[in-house]
Image (cartoon, rainbow, N blue to C red):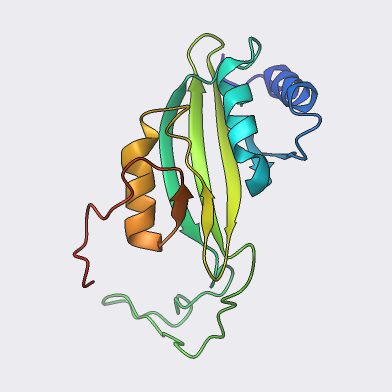
Length: 174
């Protein structure tokens, strides 16, 4: 059964994460039958190895990695209340103040699968604001290579230790 239909599996995974990562400063959030592990950026490399190699975790597959920009999070620019019935209307307020130096402006979000334990996990690492940077997880999950390059290209997030961090989707003049 999946975790959503079996709350005991959710609780068990939260407990295992708490024990395995007790000294890493991580936080777990559960919502709608899913777990999000918030990891301090300076602990990312250590946590990545633990998630992959700990016998009770074994998150051996990186499913996805993406960048997130929280600059306008919670500030809606969609005018849905006044939208016309013949199409959509969009009232855009482009004068919003964006917190450039907010340490939680950019994040990298990872999705993992444990084939052995049939579990999924989301992990979020905040990368900073002015010059977002986190460690590369390519040494742990080789599949991260392309995903990290994409997050670099589209969000400007730097991945310390990446073997070939260069653009893949946009031109260097973009």
